Length: 261
Image 1: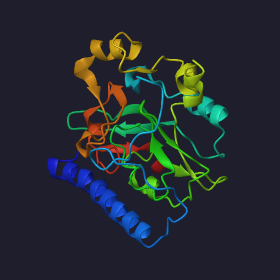
Image 2: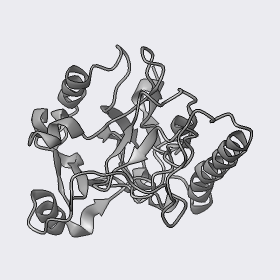
Image 3: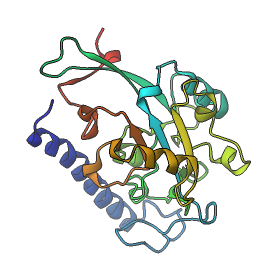
C-alpha cells in the first residue's frame, strides 16, 4: 500500500494540474479565445460558478455497496443502452481490481463501480472556458453539448477519470445520474438494472430517504474516493477497501486487471 508521502503526492498532482488549467483558461479568456461564450455567471465562494436551476430543494447522491457488487456489468450495459455513448466509451463501468497487502495469503478481488462523483466542489466546472460544464442546485453536474468545444480541460481536471471526449460528438461526455429519468420519476438506468442492489440514489436533503437510511445504518463504513482533494464527492461507498480511498490510480498495492495480461 502506498505510504503517506505517496498518498500526498497523489493528492498534490491533480491539485496542481487543476491550478494550471484554471490559469490557462483565464489566459485564454483574456486573449479572447472564448469570445463566443456568454458572460461568466457570478462566482460562488471557492471560485465555483453559481449553480443553475435544478430539482428544487433536492441534493442528489449515490451510494454504492461494494459488498453487493458482483461485477456483472449490467449497470454498464443498461447505461450504454439508455444514453448511447459511442461503442467502447462508457459513462459508468465496473472495474476489476486485484488488491494485495502484507499478511494476505492471496490477493483479494474487488469489483469497483466507477462514475462521475457529482462533487460539491467539482474541479471540472471552473476550468471550462465556455461554461459548457455546469452544476445544478440539486448537485448534478452536466455538460451543455451545444456549447462545448471539446477542449478537454474538464477531462484533464477530473481526478476520477469520469469524463471523456465523445468520439461522435467531439464534446465532453459523462454520467449525468440519468437526470432525464429522475425528472420523470424514474431511477437511473444503472440503479434500476443492478441485480445485487448495490446502487441506490436519492435525495440527501430528505431525512427519511433510502440513501440516508442506508448511510445512517453504515455510517462508520461510508467512504469516498480521494477525499484529500476536497472535491466533496457525492458518490459514497460501503465496503470500499482502504487501499482505494486515497487514490486508485498509481497505488502499488492495487492492480487494475485490464492493464495486465
